[in-house]
Length: 209
Length: 209
DNA sequence: GTCTATATGACGATAGAC
DNA sequence: GTCTATCGTCATATAGAC
Image (cartoon, rainbow over all chains, first blue to last red; front, top):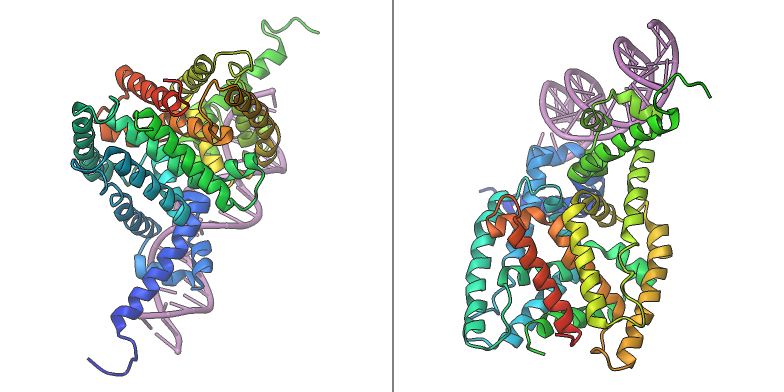
């Protein structure tokens, strides 16, 4: 271990990796996998193109690395849905968490959407594995609430599909929403109104309003 | 007008155009604009590659033609939403029409989704024009229903965003839904259950359940 | 009108100097 | 470890025979 460098090699390498991953997420979100070029990602990261190949080998490997980072986020928002929780509060917290994700990580949402839209080639194992397991677990919790008469009967998996769709649309279909509302930068008020509407549909549909 | 051909040149030409457009819609849906190649579209149509350029000139022109065909469908489903209609019946009919579109024209839905997801470059004028006008018109109808106390207050544009998202997700995110439900071909029952759930959320959220 | 053969350019990837 | 220069491939598009 030579003391020549102020920053350890590992953290320097990690900083480069993160820089590339962040740039790649943005370009993949804007252009999709095929539309994104290694040149444009390199330009976005402010690095020479060959540097990307040094760190990640291939474009596909870089793409998979970007997806990996996104997936961990996707699984972490269902925590509030637990048997002993209040259904209305738990579902509200989940919807709010999903809306926050759309607002704060719209690029991640769009990379994910693009991947699923085109067949989920790189996500099949994740969708049929951890995600399916998570939905089954949380569906059982909701079925329990229904059996106890604490909310209206509803198909839990389809409730999840609806919540995902309604919340992610604010990231994925942002151009459409902005055009219809005529507000080039999607303002705070529109976001809040969208969140309120989603909540109203979810709670109303579950008989929790 | 020579009688040499059994079929008139115009209809023969139209048949070729339709054949190419249908093949192109499928390939664009699977691969996106950048991912689709003229060769693959030609192969799907069973024609030589140069034939496509003869009829449409460029790949971009072909893509725009595909989008045009899809847009006309998009605007035609809001008919049931009229001032004198029953809110519950009108919204139900609209949701069912949108679910039918996802089931019967999933490729069109995915081409549209991909276009909006990547910035709606070719759709800006449509989104800010006819679509915005349509939403304003139908929003006024819904505002009227609310003012008359016939349904719960809700932001009409966001209600539309929610309905679009929930119904189109069955076309656009089909791989995710199939993986979670563990049913390779999305069966009749799952579709029906999805439609019922969407209806329950919309009607429940609007106080019409 | 239709198709074969080809021009032109952009892309991912790498070799090799530093 | 890092970057410049370059290779091979495949894309769109077209020229020109039929």
